[in-house]
Image (cartoon, rainbow, N blue to C red; front, side, top):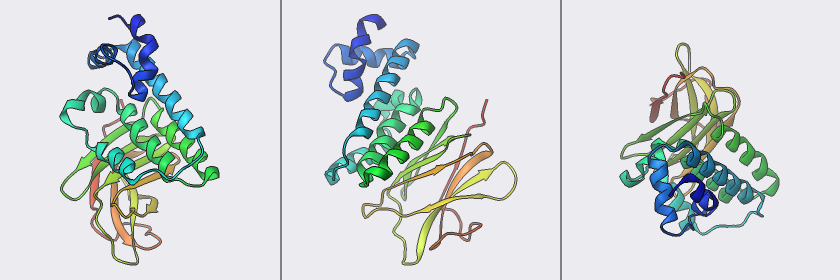
Length: 228
């Protein structure tokens, strides 16, 4: 099928409701790096995300958050989704988690818009990490900020917190905010603002309130690809 024939099905594909054979045909086009379908699906997913942000916040089932966070480490069968569409993985994870985890309407919209600006930046770099202790992704925009999503984070003792660090090519790590994990050991942390000098990202465990420089060996260190 041609891109023109599939154009009206991009929205259904983004919602996960496309029928066959259109669903498989779109996936084949995406696997083949079809620019027209990539642009069409991207636009459809951003529309879906925007509609989600306008909805009134509700308490979602715990199973929904688990299903979303389980996608942090894509399965081999979804390799095209992680490699060819890093923004799509981000939209699915970051936007969904922001929408379902923030309960205050006045707080959810700014966070959504900040996350979307990072995910939609054409020069955003994404880097995954994974080991028996934790897995997840960093999304780093040189001008918009950093979005961090993780699962299986370790439990912390009282008086301790996670702290994110921007590691420049030279010089000291730059503090990028503290955060806590939820009871299910998942976390999402958004740090707006420039990150143009980031060569790597790191997470360490620090005293409550954070530190000016890491006081412990980081539990996560992920290098970023150099900007072209």
